[in-house]
Length: 219
Image (cartoon, rainbow, N blue to C red; front, side):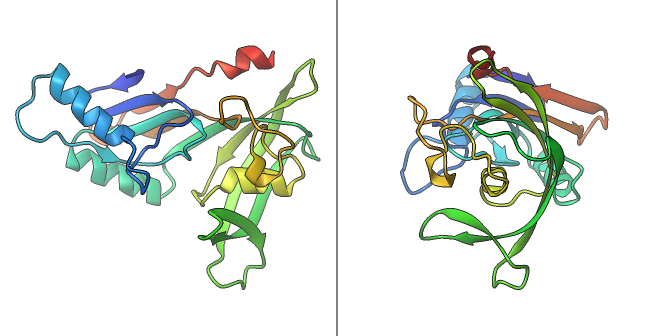
């Protein structure tokens, strides 16, 4: 368990690509259940252990994920997420640099459940939801890849993957959204780099950052 932050109310873990945050139809052990087992064993807790999912990451994405250890913390964090007081910064490695090198994406997205994929659409499309993010290129590797920092303002299905692909710069390894080839480990080169929020109990600002091994290879 790669713990990035923990107190009596919250626990943040560095998710590996391939792990799932919440249980799904695969039946694979999810992070929420793994954390319950870990806390129960480490802290010698009798009975059931609470672990609430505050936000999610796609299975092939890595990075920081925050969970609530109490129902009170979960309710307050969920309210922050709804009010956009929960700030998330992502790093993505792309083949083509976006044009311009920094800017905002303001699109309407619709989710295709059968394909498990989102598409940019007209705002009047049935089921369309507005998706907002800011981006900027922060580095370019010797191999010609570009590191893009993304500030996410809404939490739509596959939002970053879809909107960057719409800009003509699909994320490295993301075959679903137009990358020319996959990553060897099945991941995509998208990382939840950091989260920032006011602690639901202490009301102090908390910034949690996740290390990302792919950055070393990028350089």
